[in-house]
Image (tube, helix red, strand yellow):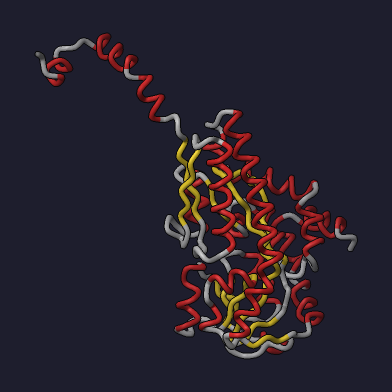
Amino acid sequence: MISLGKTLRNTSLAALTSLAIASVPMVAFAQDVLNLKLGHIQSEQDLWHYGAKKFKEELEARSDGKITLTIYPNSTIGGDRDLVEGMQMGTVDFGLIAGVLGNFEPSIQLLELPYLFRSQDEFDTVIGGEIGAEIAENVRQNANVRILNWWERGSRQVTSMKPINGLEDLKGLKIRVPEIPAMVATWRSMGANPTPMAWSEVYTGLEQHVIDAQENPIPFIYGGRLGEVQDYLAFTNHKFEYVTLAMSELRWNQLTDEQKKIITEAAAAATAAENEAVRTQTSEMLKKMVDQGLQVTEPNMDEIAAAAVAAHEPFAKTVNIDLYNRINTALKR
């Protein structure tokens, strides 16, 4: 009996090629299951994770187990920027990404302007039409990231260590904002001191008074346990929020038509489930935080909004003033 090692040392290139070809069926069988991974920055208690789990269930059920999904919450495989860069390189398949995409495709930054949209219906009108499709295509072409769906997150509110009742209370407020230029410019226009910071650092930053306030949708505030380190929540409703279920365009282009169909249908089902959860659970989450001691104020939003809107056009001129004007036209302003 001849050992395999000796066989390989004495085998010609042609024979080795034949040996490799003979092993192909075993390799194909091993690769019959497509293993994908999804990363996001939130905790397992957040509705993002609920939506991600729904996506996993739908993918695996619709593919009869031939597509599997591993979910990495809590910035386990990186923050927002890391996830986008991973999708660009093909090392991450899916990410739940919001405004940080604006660092890779400028046009999406317009959606990050506080008080551009005054209701969820206004946001849905724009994002569900030609403008939303155009922005998604810009992201695909210029960032190499495919937006599969837009998930609702509810409107953003401000939490702080002091009550906020009007514009005066924002002056000098050291507020954490995402690493999004549109939000930095607008909060500065409102008189605050915006401090860009990764989400994973927010709880500690508030606890140690590196920052005094932050702004996010209620499910984010609840999932991040920010009521433990903040005394007040102001209903500013300054931004009607989304997150994209995004996919690596590199990975998408490697898929079969059947796999693309399964992913598209699973993404639609997960989107519907996550959106419904946001609508039905947000008020319950707020009530729990109020019961635990979080105090709620309702500031004068008109004066706050006017200060924010003053920054819109100057910022839009640095990104895409034509698209900004078309958004306002679509909103009949």
